Length: 327
Image (cartoon, rainbow, N blue to C red; front, side):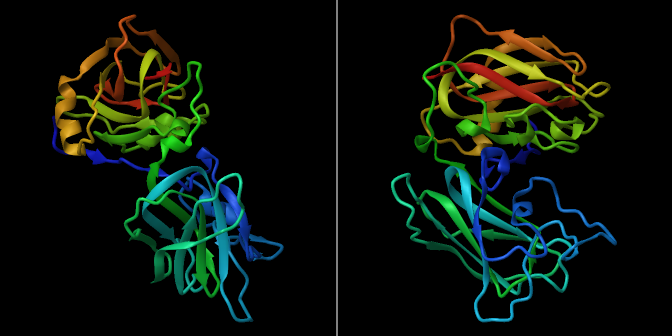
């Protein structure tokens, strides 16, 4: 296995794809807080103004003329544990906050009382910069976040990278998509994602365009591209659906799929280096342009919690779906 690969192993808990939304805020005069959660990179539109002033692709508050600071409360679509925060002030130059901090809490359905814990202390922000911060180590589960900015200003995007706590998710008794991000599945690693992000494969809605799938660069040597997925919960997969929607002159010629089950927690290097020996669920499946190729698996189903999709030699896949039950 090529030692050069991309480690992923997280989910953006702030993504609207998993149901994350704005719960409350102090102000959004110049820019809607919902823009904070967008998965797409921020853009700048020169000369574009709305009724309140310059249009900015992010959350922006008015200039504060009283004591205090601005904030936004975000309800996470799925409860999780947070490892990293990314506060992006792209294109906010002269109007970015001076500082920011993050608080978090968990509220069940019975209570609506916020009891905040600080997970990121007050940090200095720079203009037009993507800031990365490691979150205070904790095994606490959160489903509400409060981003505090001091005293006011604009933030383009907020990402919170971590793990969905699957024990807090309701799993259906009937067959369902075990690979869905909505059920806690995530990308562990991939060989390449030059044109399209690997995590797009697990999105719950149909691909919108070619840029909304996973696409690798053109391979000029031997080998093939691959991606490894960790299931939210171990299960038995009966059917797979490999989709190449919008990939017409750049889809892979064929693919194979491998599966593996481990009771123990394994580091990513071990997962990647041993994956070539995993059992094949599909040895060879021809792919077509802009299509959905469904494949029924063997009746002798085996429990897995890792799945590897290999594409030959390179190209783009829009989605991978499964049908099965948890173990």
